[in-house]
Amino acid sequence: MNHPLTRVIDLFRDLEILVIGEAMLDRYLEGMTGRLCREAPVPIVSLVACRDAPGGAANTAVNVAALGSRAHFLSVLGNDAEGVRLRQLLEERGVDTDLLPVDPARKTLTKSRVVAAGQLLVRFDQGSTSAIDRETEQDVIDRLIDLFPRCDAVIVSDYGYGILTPSVIATLGELQRRSPRVFVADSKNLAAYREVGLTAIKPNYEEALTLIGERCGNHGESRAERIVGWGDCFLQATGARMAAVTIDTDGAVVLERGRPPYRTYARPTHHSRAAGAGDTFLATLAMALAAGAETPAAADLASAASAVVVATEGTSACSARDLRGQLNAEGKLAPDIDELARRIDVHRRGGRRIVFTNGCFDILHRGHITYLGQAKSLGDVLVVGVNSDASLRRLKGPSRPINSQDDRVQVLAALSCVDHLVIFGEDTPSALISALRPDVFVKGGDYTRERLPEAAIVEEFGGEVRILPFVTDRSTTAMIARIRAVYGKDGNPVPERLCSGQPIAVNGNGAPA
Image 1 (cartoon, rainbow, N blue to C red):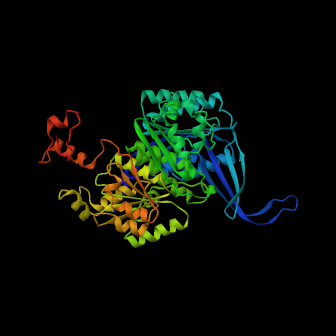
Image 2: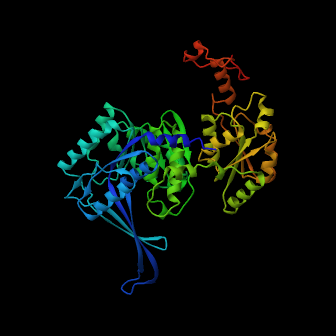
Image 3: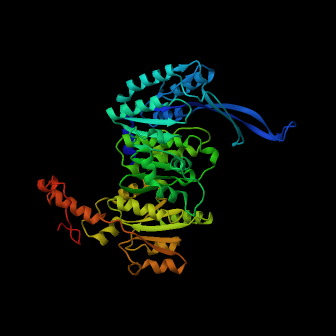
């Protein structure tokens, strides 16, 4: 069974994406070490391999191509061996290099890393970091004007090394006003794009706080909580509709005008494996938005693609096939309670805090997504018990479920905040809770402690019961009633209701009032 988000990935093949920014060559000098140098107390590395990969904005373009879209890359290369090598690598990976002019006065940006036994020892940087000259700048602008209208999305990957001059940024703004596109930017100076008309920005945690003049010190809040608290400031400072702030091992926080924050989660990994993960997140986010995905879906796809990259050594890209594999629900759905208990025991031995919640999740809506994100924030691992079709029918009546248990599980598996899923057939999750012994049992605000027979079980083994605020005006039952009110019993639209644009009132039982 295909994961729901694979439909978005399928749409990538119809997109043309423009990436503009600094092209870099990432070089890895790999070897072994087991002794120290006589001249100084430093390791001697016996080199066994040299591996090159596109880096910086070039890696963003490679990710676009790997995920299935046509990638156009606009940058400037030096007239040197590194520039020739980088162009070759891009062409091998399916990136259109027709927009890569050569400036003989510049040196291609190159980052050379010395790695021994998987450990990064030192990095050497070389290449031009000053602004491109007037003639080259005009060349970039001319190429930009030609290609911009033909692309579905524009990605800026601005490292501050001279490609995105004020004139180039002004041209981007004029083109965006004339012919708006999905426009996503990752820049060391996001404030410079305030008037461009950005769809989204993707700073990391430090860049986000620098943007608003904050320091990265610890004020008793988690990094995600700090980002949420300053959300409006990020959007105001850049004029963007959306901000996806990446927080390395803590995932990302997505902020959007008029909507509650959305959190994605990442599996912690060694920092040396993080090279290029931000490029992958940036490319996938922009492509998903260009394909029409809603913000949470776009963020979860970007998070899943980044997870693929950090699982490999060095600078790498995520392919469409890799991303589909990462989204496979089999990794989250446990076949039975015993298997789930085994997985949870591994987490518990690792000192992780286990959060459990349950529900029908018949038609997943924004209230569910907000609730599950809040539940995840109460611990490290979120386990969701899903009522089986038979169980849901007993609870909700013969007309339910609308979606089968397999479909409901697949949709829930698309959320990065959900770590494990299990289907249960009883009316309550008491047996699940007894087997899993979660640290926190969570329910929504339409419940009370007295209405939860499972609460006593949780508290018997020292667990905590938390009732989260109920998201108003978000109810599956009411949603179904509105659909029936609009389409009528025979399934045909009721014209005056369909076209009125007015909300349809429902009574306390979820029927049209």
